[in-house]
Structures are given as structure tokens and as C-alpha cells.
Amino acid sequence: IGQEILLFDSVDSTNNYSKKIAKDAIHGTVVIGEEQTGGRGRLGRNWSSPKGEGIWMSIILKPSIPPTEGMKMTQIAAASVCKAIREAAGVEGYIKWPNDIVVGGKKVCGILTEMAGELNKIDYLIVGIGINVNNQSFPEEFKDIATSLTIEKGKKIDRKTLIACILKEFETLYQHYIDRRTLDETLEIIRLYSAVLGKTVRIIKGEQELKGRVLEINDEGLLKVQLEDGKEELLVSGEVSIRSE
Ligand code: BTN
Image (cartoon, protein in one colour):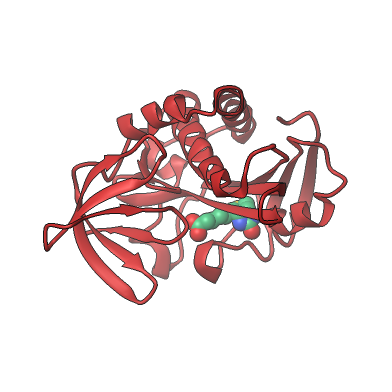
């Protein structure tokens, strides 16, 4: 991971750029933008990516795994970022299953994983990671839901050190998964630093909104919740959005 790193002063979206070059890129290529002019979030949302203030990067992966396993890369990324911001920035982040890192209930990192391929083979996967690092403030509309590492820590955080740490953690967890086909090491981190385990959450599933208590994150990385009517349901990442109550 990171044998090839492409750094841009400005790019529309590191995920878009990665898609463009993915076919010819080597596995583990990392694309970083100092700013993104068209950063994308999940569910078609925009992702604010001001110059020099955050880490806006994508990792291109070419694993030989079935497409159904692809979303596990999101969890590997979430675990890596959570561990790295604790180690390299000293910020106590928690993972809001499956793809956000929060501090004090506010979001510092979002992950957008995109996949291309056929029914039974992945051509490539792009794991897009956005981290608010040195933002001092946020526009009015994001004030209550977003924060940055600098705001939480009260000092500037070195982005290079953090990127290196994320890539190192990612490589370890990714390789473990590829070699053994188990998410155990990743899940250990996800469970230890979970922002949702044992909590009552709102679950947005398409048009539906449900309420339930999170019972466990199972060995496949699925979220097991108990709904208000007592029924248990397994949630697959990518299909749902979780909000705290
Ligand atoms: C979300 O929480 O909605 C996901 C946000 C993902 C943002 C990152 S920044 C780098 C990469 N390029 C993009 O356009 N999006 C992802």
C-alpha cells in the first residue's frame, strides 16, 4: 500500500481521479488532494474539502475477493483511521459503524468505498477517506455535526505523519484479511472503539426509519440490532445509515 503516491494541489475528487486511472494503476496506489473541488460523500452528498485543512485521499485496491466482501474494506479503513488518529494525533475517536469516525458525537472522518467489476470478480476497489484535520471552524450548517482533530486536540496536527500511520495500519489489517480471510483483527478495533455498541440508535434504511438497540457487530462485520418490537435484524453496511438517538 502506498508504493505509488499521487499528490495533487487541486483535484475534483480523489475517488473520481482514482476511477479514471484504476485500470492501469498498481494495487495500493494512493491518490491525495490538497483540496477537492467536487468532493463526494455517501448518498450523493457533497464533501467539503478545503485546501490544506484535511486529508482527502483514496486508496486503489485490486484484491482477489468476491464482490460481496468488498464492503469489508470500509471497515478495515475505519479501524485503521481510528487507530491512527489515536496514535498519531492523540485524539480519542470512536467508530460509528460502518464508516464514520466521531469525536464527542461529531464527525471527523467519513469513508466512501466504491467498487467496479462483474458479478463474481472485483476489477478494483476505491477506498476514499476524508478527515477533517486542521479545520478551525465549520460553516453554520455543519457546526453541530462536524469537528476536526485540531479543534479536539487544541493544536495543529501533522497530516503527513497521520497519513503514514493510516497507511501502515491499513496495510497490516488488509494483509491479515487477505491472508487469513478473517476480519478478526479489524473487528477487535471496531468493537473496542465502537460508538454504537449497546446504544439505542435510529436506523435509516431507504425511506424507512427504525429504532433499535445495537446488540453486536458479528464476525462478518454486520450490525445486529434489536428493534422496538423485539425482533432482531442484521444490518449490512451500504444499505443503512445510523444516527444516534
Ligand atoms: C461520507 O461520510 O459521506 C463519506 C465521505 C468521503 C470523503 C472522501 S474525501 C476523499 C474521497 N474523495 C471523495 O470525493 N470522497 C472521499
